[in-house]
Length: 218
Image 1 (spheres, one colour):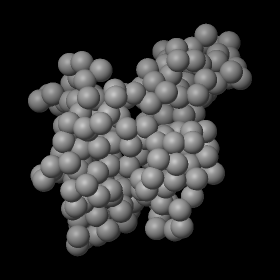
Image 2 (cartoon, rainbow, N blue to C red; image 1 turned 45 degrees about the horizontal axis):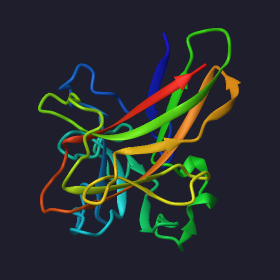
Image 3 (spheres, helix red, strand yellow; image 1 turned 120 degrees about the vertical axis):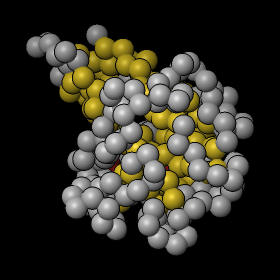
Image 4 (cartoon, rainbow, N blue to C red; image 1 turned 90 degrees about the horizontal axis):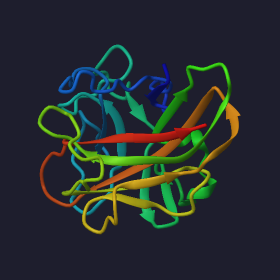
């Protein structure tokens, strides 16, 4: 059976941790969320992101925004990921360092790693891959994969490949899709990296959005 796994690609000791999918729908325990926070992180001060500003820290969390990194769960920084912060369309701030062009950011500094594994014995290539920011319903399901999330801006890019951010949520988003570069080399395993940056458009906690990937392989 073909599989697609979401993994934390960076940030010791969170690197390599599998981000559990919401299975069954409504299961919000464990490593099911990526949380975006102010400079203090989920248990620090300030933990909130000021409206119309972008996050300073990124963590693996549960549905309540509690740090759920590698054991012991809840220990400060145990689930901290490398933070990539939106600046302008062509640059980002990585972990508080100087501005860098998106195309110069290494893949392993992406917020998410999506690993596609083919169940067959013949290597495949991929095409028409889409990464989407989706609206979750009350049971953590997705009613319409094309619906744009409102109330926050989501900026995305494929590190080392894209020259500019793509907005996939919030006012101003054309749609909720980030186009992923085709993998023309055949293999049984394909890794895709995406960097994320979030800015709240309204006051209040937001946990009714998620991420979905669609892949064609041949």
